[in-house]
Length: 484
Image (tube, rainbow, N blue to C red; front, top):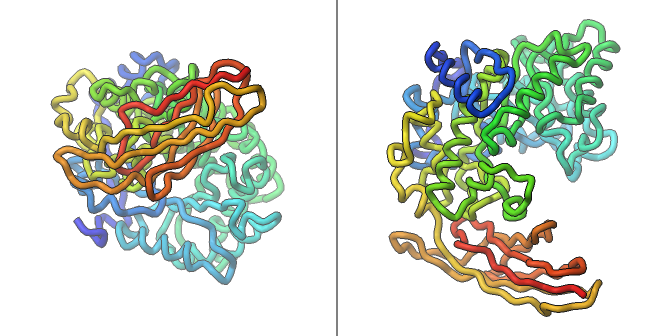
């Protein structure tokens, strides 16, 4: 399939009707996982994909099944695109949205804007001005895109909204004001929804909701948000529904906005694998540890359990009616056992991961009805990446307190079944010990890198693991340094 493939079904959402049997199975699964107070699932659920402007997955084997009614049946696509550079320069943003339109049409899109602190929109006082000046332009250029988000994960680091729930709420208020008054802003008439939230877990612990409620009191005639979104990755990783349920409870109890809530979208969910530092963290849940197990069958089984949880999340509440998987893009895949943002449905070598099989073949979750062997052949989860080795040394293994230690590593060129020729590793090395993250370092053209650290008093076992598109390590490099 080429990248120019048009999926079709423009402007129409085909919804999956949950049968009584399917809803009952989903509820039973959640009860088995110990989820309290599970409400009936929504009568209809729209399943989608969440991307970051990367459509290369369309060339991967079986990608058509992600949109097929007999497969995952994605009928909406969310893309995260940058704010315009300025009111006179929307070229990059417009181009990325146009690419989305070329694949699925305007009616199948949900566009989430993102402003980073390093961009022009991130300058002090510029974020709101940028949005007010450019959102009408985008809505005029793409009049049939009905769903818009004003800031992806506003509380996350590196954004002007990181520590400002007030600014994040103002962005929603401004976006909603523009969308609800198209004639005033010269936008073609149409129904547009400004999705609120778009955050990880309980973003700002309720301050965002409070700020929106306060803002509404100063904007007569502006309607409270009816559609909210959440990224509850921890639920999927840990095969539970705790975060999703807590967000629902917090949202519905929020004065001034709770009564208006009609829809809760889970706009980013994925089977993210833990980083090496997380693997040794006591706080990582057991299913998260199993997903990065060196035993392939255990890792695949845990990933499948997480994928089942993804599919069962609508059973938490009847208002959960849109669920998006992040992400299909193969280039985002890391072959290590535990890429921090490793949620791809495909490996870097274009093989389908266990999650793909669950989403495409078993969207109505019933973990007891299938086994690994019925989902995918061993080659799909054993030989998805090239195997390589790592060696290294420390500048000293016994030092005085405060004395820096340099740890150098080299990663070899490896092989992959059935013996393809592969390039040198080109990824990054993650250094960590049992209690702290020691940072990342980029491999050079010879596959080598180093880092210099100051370690605490005592015995420190430092490990180095590889995050690479093609290779994985059977085991990380490890060296023990004693600090006196």
